[in-house]
Amino acid sequence: MSHINRKKLNISIKRAYEDATPEDGYRVLVDRIWPRGRNKVTLKLDQWARDLAPSADLRKWFGHDPKRWEAFQERYRSELDAEEKREQIRRLLAEADDRSVTLIYGAKDEEHNQAIVLRDVLSHLYKG
Image 1 (cartoon, rainbow, N blue to C red):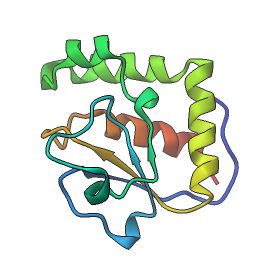
Image 2: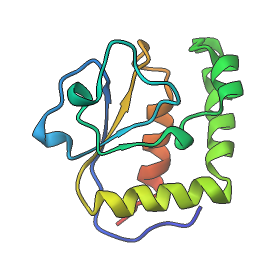
Image 3: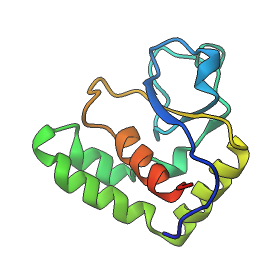
């Protein structure tokens, strides 16, 4: 993916079960499935980027098994490298309009989830 040259973008991640704060900036849900027990009002989303989440097959294969983490990252990055996904990422960054971006995810595992991978991909794309 080519780099998007702008000022440095602040990208953070947050569980869907943590309260929204003004510092979150542009809030994007990056899960394919809506987080249980949460509603639109409490999530305070700017976007649900369902199509940027891992494919259903990849999500099911991974199952948040830490032993599959390295392979999951490689496979997910490969999915994100498709032209359609690159265009969706460009739109997401354009819609964020230089605001901080917070990637929202529902997984219990805070160390092995797609938001970590997507944050890394976005950070490498958005170099200043």
